[in-house]
Structures are given as structure tokens and as C-alpha cells.
Length: 145
Image 1 (cartoon, rainbow, N blue to C red):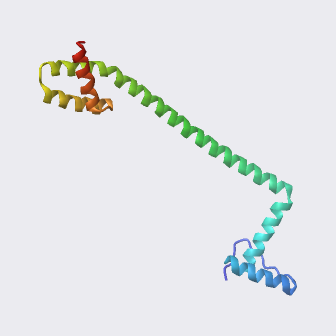
Image 2: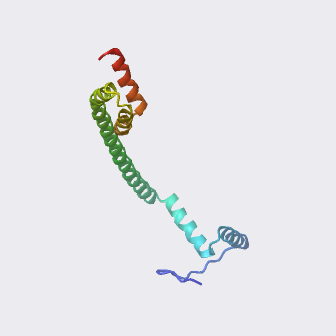
Image 3: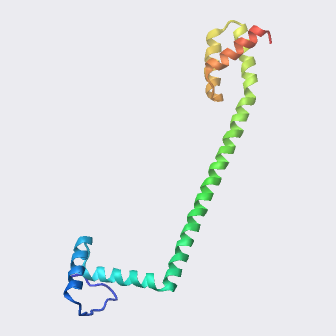
């Protein structure tokens, strides 16, 4: 039998029905009878005593505030990342006209394999399909820009 630190040995006189209930519930819960009685005592005290209830509510509020602060920090990090991604996309799009003009020059020199390789490389950098870059360059060449 385990001996708890700060434990006292007490004897109680209970009727047979109460003892039977304690045996059945403790067996069903997989805990000892003394642990069950201890649980009931703490639970009863918590539910009856307004001071304990207030302490527990304040503790829960503090935990929830902490969790809320953590979630707000995570949201702020995500929003910052989103803003940086948007800035990055804008910077990449600023480079697109220069890349299209280079592709037009290479295509006008009939260097199709070089243009394809260049479009693939720049497409990866811009995050667009190389076909899109080639198509745009060819359309501008046809229009005479």
C-alpha cells in the first residue's frame, strides 16, 4: 500500500450501502478507495466554497489570457510573413518587363533554345510558368513592341 506524504490515517463509520458504492466506483475508475474519497472531498470543497471557485476561475482566466496572447503573437507573425510575401511578389513583378524584353531580344535573334532555357530559369525566379513568359514575349514581338 502506498503511503502519501502529509497523509493522516483516519477511520470512518459508514453504512454498508456507502461502502459498497465506494468499492464499486473506485473499482470502475481504477483508483483506490482512499483516492476516491480524497477526490470527492476536494471536488465537494471546490464546488461549495466560493473562495475556491473564485480562485479556480481566476486561474482559468489567467491561462486563457496567456493562450490568447500566444495566439495573437502567432497571428502577428503570420501577418508579417504575409506582408513580406506580398512585397516579394511585387518586387518580382517589377523585374518581369525587363525579363520579357531580354526574351524578345533573344527570340528576335532566333536563339530559341536559349530563350526557352532563359524563360525556364526566370520563370522559376518569378514564380510563373516559362510558357507564360515565352508567350508574352512572342506576343509583344508580333505586335512590334
